[in-house]
Amino acid sequence: MNLARRAAEITPSLTLEITSKASRMKEEGHNVVNFASGEPDFDTPEYIKEAAICAIKEGFTKYTPSTGYLKLKEVISAKLKKDNRLTFSPSQIVVSSGAKHALYNILQVLCERGDEVAIASPYWVSYPQMIKLAGARVRIIETCAENKFKLDKKSLACGITGKTKALILNSPGNPTGCVYSRQELAQIAEVAIRHNLYIISDEIYEKLTFDGKRHISCASLNKKIYKRTIVVNGVSKTYAMTGWRIGYLACASQKIIEAVGNLQSHSTSNPCSISQRAAHEALKDPREKQLRQMVKELQSRRDCMLRALSKIAGLSFVKPEGTFYVFCNISRVKLDSIAFARRLLKEAGIAVVPGIAFGRDDYIRLSFATSMEQIKEGLRRLKDWVENKGLWVTQ
Image (cartoon, rainbow, N blue to C red; front, side, top):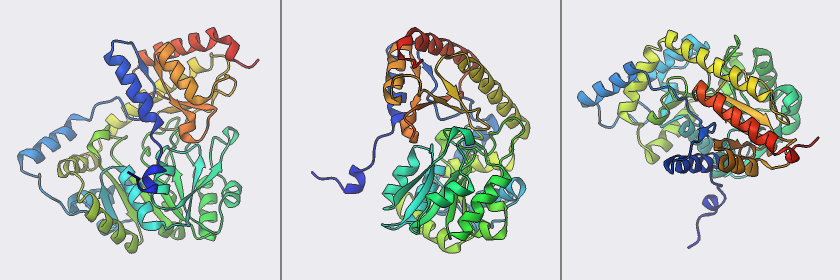
């Protein structure tokens, strides 16, 4: 049997490979420290769970409109106005089964064969695969640690071509934790407007910023870029609701909104009605005090991980300004990122994600979305493992 070419071209997720191996080792009784996780280890807040339970008891278990039920879109509209200074009516919003689903839908309706979509490397693992599935070509623009892995005006202008239709911009960024300033976004917006690019702004880590950094939505800069930006967000990271699968997009173009709605109506129908009620409660009553406490705890964990990493010979990093990841340079260690990750898991019981999954084979990604005890234990093991294999480290 021959599969469709688009299916054959999609590569498996290295993140899932490492995670599944770590899970199997735990089931077999091994003591594994998991730094591969892409989700907060905090539980979904009780008041959000209660909203879901009420939805079930009230019989809110039927189909909703395919683009999301109106009350949820109204509260998303209010959230965008309050938090991001963006004015989108409910009719300019589509609720999907996670932010990943929203991104997939956007690329499906925007791209044709021969189009290009630009992404900065390092990039989130699913961007290239979703672009390929849309029939477009991936246009990778390299960034450097010296610039905190951020695109700038020059690199973007040099990295695109006449076939480039869109740029995916992720701030705060996975895997690097970079957060773009207003000035940096203004430079990118200038290039996008000049070259008639759409910006697909992935803002899923919006609330997870540190050291006084503040997320700014590119769409909020001016009217021109507002019209060319598709904002993507969700409740997964901010409210520890990864499994609930609710994301959304907001866009000024009614043509794009209608196309995404039509696509979704024939693919997944509506997002889960119960999850929509839970997301409605989360966004209507964001409990800022709880959120600040979660961010404070994540920042403490980040600082703990960075202090320990800084003491390990041969490893280096750029201090993340957001998310819950550290992108760690292993170029002085004589192993590629897959070999490093596989051996680290097997020999030291530590799960990390190989950097090649993000386009950089000389890096690994470590998540600090785990307990302080696990961070300390894992970094102790990592230090012992690297330094006891001293022959691997380039002097």
